[in-house]
Length: 211
Image (tube, rainbow, N blue to C red):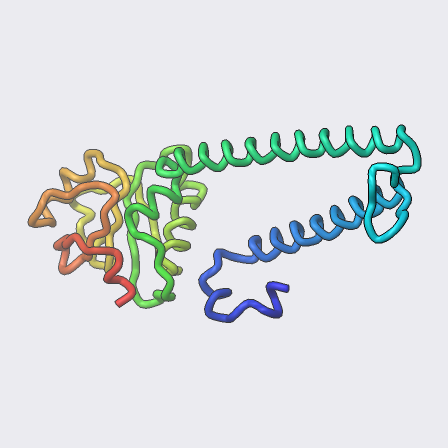
């Protein structure tokens, strides 16, 4: 249904194949569930006309089974619903402290492919976020650019490294800022994106990247 009916403009903005697959799985589960409920109902009552009444069950026992099953399914549904809501609320509350949350706060979510500019990330290698490339992957995803590198150390003698990149993304507020202050006219802060212009750092609004 998604593959054949979704507009191309909408499909381009979506976040990957997993949304298609998840939707297909949920759609399939829904069809199976509807058919299961219909079959169970048909096995527990006898249709006596266009409308059912309280005597339409095969026996009192089947009516009791039907009622108890309905109550149990309702209780389970409400339990799963509340559990899912609490889980989503918990994820939303902790999202700002995750790698995607930090990257989104700094660069937003770019929708236009950028193959021209090169980006350098400075961040501490906490939980091996740089070593296992999870941070670089997140930045590539939200910047929609393949040209992303990451470093966890920066010395004053390495300032020439900046000339190889167009933008610098600083995610961690630590000693690296003291060294980089010499290349900026203003005090640098973390979770900000800076344009590199002849070793000078100029803070920019990430929204201007798509202009």
